[in-house]
Length: 214
Image (cartoon, rainbow, N blue to C red):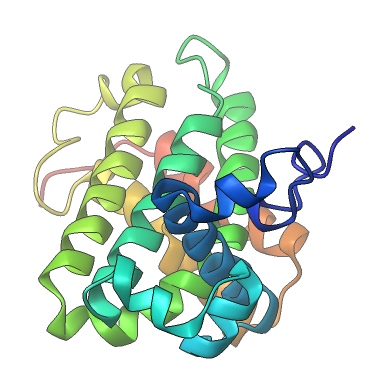
């Protein structure tokens, strides 16, 4: 298995064309994003421009040759991460029994949220002043909501108020959100298994109880 196949990133790929690849703008662009994501994941903090450049194996000034400013760098990194987890998401069949679907979806969300957490936390600090980051995060939230609606379409179809404001779909989205996961992991100090169990319990309860009109 090559270094690239082993997941060590483009900056460590050993090929005969290594020198040419390092001069390739597309390669450098990807290496910088992978460096940012890797450093953020390892430390949980925003990495410096110098650290990003060193990890990518390029000069420090190269960072802003490819990215106009800090916002552009983080928008691109957030989008790259989102594209990756969407591509690797395994569809949960709506025809499955409810409990099986809940277990599969919560397990998948937990894996995604663990990967997302470092860059998401950094993004929350930048989001108020960054229309680009707000857009990327809104796209991610919309994807998660649409996924919930598709997976639990049979159950939601039996609830006449399912998609109304404050209805079951909104409740499911809140219960299974990254914010809920992060609260359980960071504030409550639960491990992944316990956090997943708490979210699964809530989601099952929401699907088992049809809402009543006031």
